[in-house]
Image (spheres, each protein chain N blue to C red):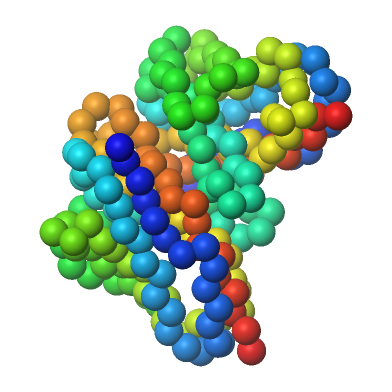
Length: 114
Length: 111
């Protein structure tokens, strides 16, 4: 079974703090993704990566950065957390498109910024 | 631009059949996927249609019509555990393009 794990299920941070969300997958997937999910807005793509050290902006990259130093790990960084970044953050991974289209999601991190 | 439209909420009775529709607009469309998400859980893959027609997996079926830019998810013999959010997502052609998700349909199954 594919397993995608995220470092925390719940996180509380203060405005202005630097926040790191970690995601690890164990199936040697090329692609990794970060989404945020808010009520009524569905899943919105923040960043994705299709290879080590590669990254692409999604629909809402402002206020976020990412790091992919190893194939299995994809980190989302909030440089200076703000209250409007309070949300559920979901990581996902997939094989390279053309091989399989399925994305496998981690359990999510619910972040509260005070 | 690209977009997906699906109803925000659907309510159905246990044991019944429910259909969740999804219309999309995009260029470079390759296929349509469906994901299920229970409250507090992660989205999980349900089905994928690359060709027109019906794909059946147990109680769940998914349909695609490319000419109508339309698909649906059909759930039969509804159970209380089917109460969840259902997302359609289209797969784009070429390269390393990510899925584009709709806003989700909240299905409530009632007794």
